[in-house]
Image 1 (tube, one colour):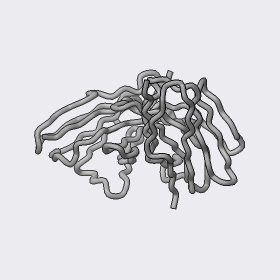
Image 2 (cartoon, chains in turn blue, green):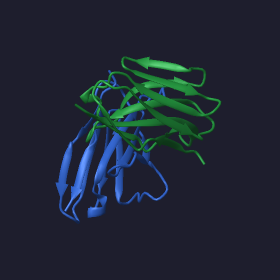
Image 3 (cartoon, chains in turn yellow, blue):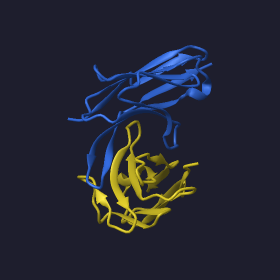
Image 4 (cartoon, chains in turn green, orange):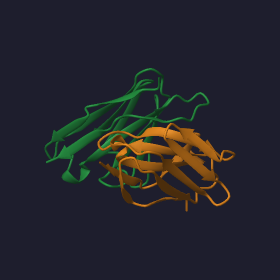
Length: 116
Length: 116
């Protein structure tokens, strides 16, 4: 149980375009989903926290207009990188929490974004 | 400042040998501590979780220890296998932030390479 999937697993896009990454909880309902970014040889950095049906809470230094997060259902959250630039190239990982007293976070397999 | 520091940054061992990874934290208040294994290009997978009152927790060939007084944890890997090659991340669940969730404080990880 507690499986989280991400799609796509990797994506290459041109500078200036937008890219959408999906995060799904497959066998549980996720009240809260988290988006992380990981640069090579560095640890995960929290970008934002999203609760179903409400606006995401962004960490300091993360541009909310550049990284659009939508958590429209209890099993799906999306991260859209708008007007992507090469410096946005990174490994994006989501995690999901069932809530209802559980503070467990189950991590997805990650999405490798390369902006050329 | 809430921080998690891991050592060594990287480690190379021969297959079949044992190794111990270290984690020191300054997170307060402390909720629990997890060790994750992250294969290259994949999301983190939980190995062990320890609360304040637990000193040792095993999961197969992985044994984690926790000293809440000195704020130190270790992960011991016994009879290493080639498939153990990965990054091992120490994560401490820290203070609660807005939204009612405790923030995860990530260490930078130890990159372990097991050679034949």
